Length: 149
Image (tube, rainbow, N blue to C red; front, side, top):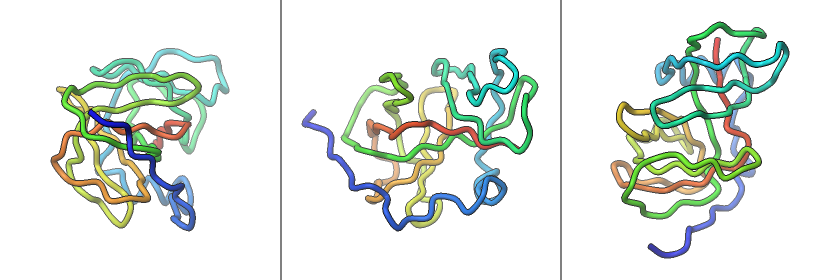
């Protein structure tokens, strides 16, 4: 495996018009996961997924969700390279590396990405095209976000 290919920042690419708008666009790809209790008012959701614990910035409409919670996990791709093994690695400081596959393109610059079995789904934004069904390791810019109603 060679070095990861770094992608230019997604400048000029509208990632979201509003929390509500993002949820409406991608709610079909939401999944329900249990969450660990967090202090009231915490901006972080601790999601308990089959691929491990994910700490995601809460982009919900209301505070203090109850477990389980239905979320669309969203990240911005910083770099990508071919990969064989699946999984999720927390790189520290809100950074994650996802090893999985692009299920399909959703709309310009957005891709549905699956990790593990059972699959944990992510809606990824990328300034460069990502090829469907190819196993990839993608590094995300912080923070990983969790959109919820």
